[in-house]
Length: 548
Image 1 (cartoon, one colour):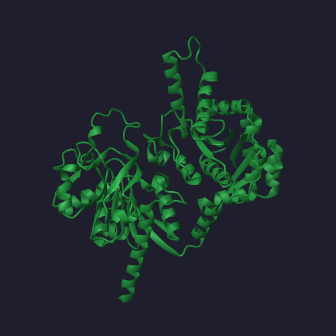
Image 2 (image 1 turned 120 degrees about the vertical axis):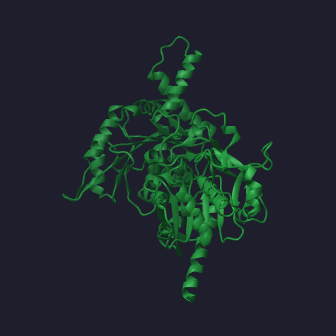
Image 3 (image 1 turned 90 degrees about the vertical axis):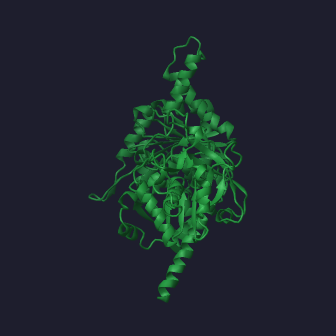
């Protein structure tokens, strides 16, 4: 098995996850079985309890792990489902070591960072490759070189070269090269210091990727190579591009794939990167453009909705259309005029998931506006639940209907805590998580969206559900339950997975998060249909405007 270790320096948020994912796409395009592992040096067990404003989106894997958002990048670029073993944190490592010590696994040994913690890290790296039948494992070490919390992980990957052999390991270091406009020059000194810090812990990078605003002159790359003891042909640039999916093409064009082939003794192969070229072509030259409003409460931190944005982009690719986003802060939706202003000129409205009461009434208003104005609507998780609350209040006549999450004393708890959540203690990893089945009702919009499939699996992350006691009343008022979880004992057909309105151009709510399974080469069906509906709505608006 071969390993590529990706580290970063100078500053965080340089894009190690994108470079890791792009390298994976380049190797996948050569036909190799590739997987990726993200190491996060924080002490949390997982990302599930972190604030979206601080950490961005929590990505959920098929087996129910709440992980770093980079796992989502890996899945989209590698086109493979990953699992909880693909995200390792300091908390997981130390918890495992302590549990082993308590069980007596170490017998009479003094338990230390070296070798016990580092051995645990190395075993988790090897395990990913074994269990996922990978030929190449790409390991991204989070944080920056020099951070005290990263030291055990750096020591572990240093040892991996001795364990796996130098012919089976590569170290890639991503670092910043700032451009000073006052002197009109690129500065390589931060990179030199970053590599010096990496070398001080025993790791000499084989490849350096320089992050910059624009492509770097060859003399800058040669200077970096000279002062970091790296071959001249092993320095590459990851410069700013308009679209994320250009990065694999940019790096491959510079020869990164060939350098990895040489470093790992791989047979030279011409890669198939057609899916990325086609995606970039559509993104740069779309046939149509649609404007979608995302009505949420984390709108100042787009990374909180990263997979949603990517799924919308994938839906646009399938329709050969560019999707432009109108961010709507639901906390500012108070009066009717606020709604008309916020949604002026949009072709569709999406209400995403979330937690907590803040902004809920604004989300309910957004759902009502879409229902009454005939604007295409897609509700994701909480977005489905607020659509049910809105329908219950204003169509079914259930005054003050609400979720018990927001109003424990509501007279009509149309959304309630799932029974299995009543005895749950703690917050980490205790929700309904991962892949769950959905039985689709024939003849519905949902059935059309999924191409006539009767059973599909989507990923979930929630504690609350549509209260089954209110389903008959809601259905009598005209709400269509188009998807349910099959076979839940004692709950009839099971919990509500999807709702829709029959007399609306496109009004769909899903309890799941289908965005987590969307990829450029296999876009999520609800998002493809949503963008298609937005295009149709745009056509109707233009037709009416022309007739007027």
